[in-house]
Amino acid sequence: MFSFFKKKISQDASPEAATIPSERPRANWMARLGKGLRRTGQSISTVFTGTQIDDALYEELEAALLMADAGVQATEYLLTDLKRRVKDSHTTEPAAVKALLAASIAELLQPLEKTLTIGTHKPTVIMVAGVNGAGKTTSIGKLTRHLSDSGASVLLAAADTFRAAAREQLTVWATRNTVDIVSQEGGDPASVSFDAVTAGRARGKDVVLVDTAGRLPTQSHLMEELKKIKRVVQKAEETAPHEVLLVIDGNTGQNALAQVKAFDETLGLTGLIVTKLDGTAKGGVLAAIALWGQSRVAAGGFAVPVYFIGVGEAVEDLETFNAQEFADALLG
Image 1 (cartoon, rainbow, N blue to C red):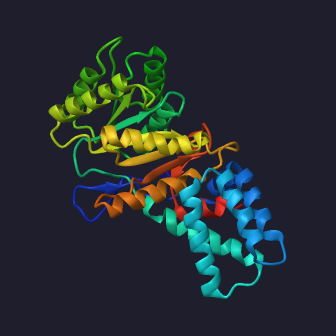
Image 2 (cartoon, helix red, strand yellow):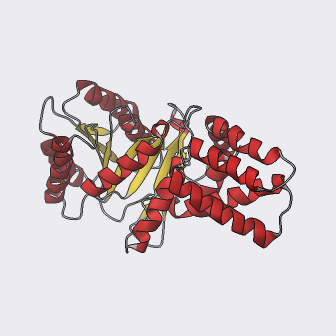
């Protein structure tokens, strides 16, 4: 787990698997997260300043949740659950309803809380996708930093071959973290990915991180290229990729859910990184993603977890996702 890899990766139940340990006190992180979500927190908190629990309170709360990008379905879900909690607990004070809402949100988000595990496969191949501007390459750089700090050996694949700036940015992170990188100027993204996985295995690396080109889910030819990269990675290593992560910008609201659905349909996502929860983002879209996850579970699948969330550009501004912490920050 990501908070932050100060020791060697700790061993879990499997003799080969390892999870990233959480050691750094999270108080400073919670302060940054709370600051990032302060607009939403202030908007929702004002709902509970009245003198009674009535229809007007629930109507104001509905509007606040919608403004926080929770979406219609998640808002309806939370209101129904909240009313049940209020009734069961015999709550009569509006101020007490806020804690009940935090509990409801945390319970909804709980299935999204999961630890990223590496070590079951060597190398663990992690393919990372996202639209341009979501913070994909930066997130890969931060993840590389913390993996390296934990003692894991990392190899980067610069499979965003169409954008020189992306290769240069990833090369900077590779140099800064003293890790290997496989890169080709103007090369085929799938070919770069194949070479990186092959090199990672030959060099005994713990992790291969594949940075793919940013694209919109509506760009069908580029989405097909992602499928090709995944197929080629599987040719290099039959069990790979072991993780397929999508980086989403927390400022994009309900469009983030649309991105998750589209990339999941194309690639079969195993996890998310939510970035830029830094003062303008509203954060409620995670409730919508969690509710979508419930429908996946009901259909026999699994909820796509949020491995990490970010509030800024610094390395320490990317942390593991905790449902209760996020719910508390969301409500100010």
